[in-house]
Length: 424
Image (cartoon, rainbow, N blue to C red):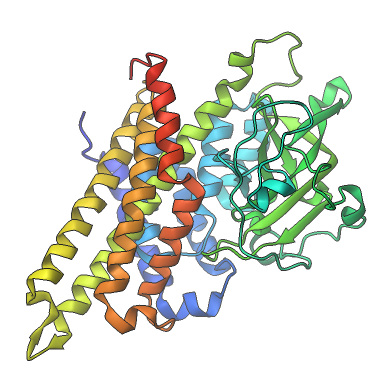
């Protein structure tokens, strides 16, 4: 394995570092609040960085996401690249690629995803932390509740309002929660459309309020593209990190199958789930790369602060306890980075990357928490000041931990995979 970036990957990373460094400033992040920085998103797309991922691969995307994470830039870069550009390029039909890729490159089309699957699609009972059996008798995984929901019409793609939706509240009543099911397929649409109608609720989807489309898995792990303007409801949700998230409600909502013009009756489950597993692995790797950047930025701020902040007449950085805490954080950050690089390399080389993706996600979840907590603690009282930029790294690190899945969940999934004799 050789993780040395190619000339194209290095050029893209340097360009991304300049754009993020110039525009994702502390002042602009404060002004953005919980929304997306539209000017920064336009600058990234004008520089051709989303489109560059088609040439630089997943490893190139990980390098770009590291630069985003260093400054916690509030743009849907990770989501639209992994759930949009890479997913459509690898699994879309020729017609879908021709229709969607130009907009994904220039930023006018933004695709997010209701993945990773661990605890994201849930019933109302799961969202409150109590497991209930799904109506179809399938497997149910414990849900992870978002922060309190703020009702109201969300902003649309990068600041544009979504068309109004009506009647969503009465379509899927929330009393008792039994009627809120994981996303499931309904009656097929006309064969020429290659779609179906989906019903279900996703408690929170990152950057949903910016998205024109959302990639949704059904109970059989088939992937469907849903236009946000067709959803029964898109409600604003406040997360730990300002990710412009939303709650997605589908009620007989039209959707098109990613990759297949129409479902193939009788196709084996493994074949239907292949695209799902591929996109899920890519998502875990990409968001692990984002966590590597978040941790690197947090540690860099802690080093800079402790080098100038004095206590008892000498800089904090000269104290052994501070040095040991920073050294541990550095090793954790490097572990996140190298496992993300290895998984991305395997993915780009066409090797089995499922176990490597789970390993990278585990390091990003478990070690990521330790690093951002260390960054807060090394800042002392300043770490609790919302006017200090380090707090954003803490919020992003904890949100990425929740999104990727807690360490025990990921280890259990990795253990099951290895027990099956997976050669990777």
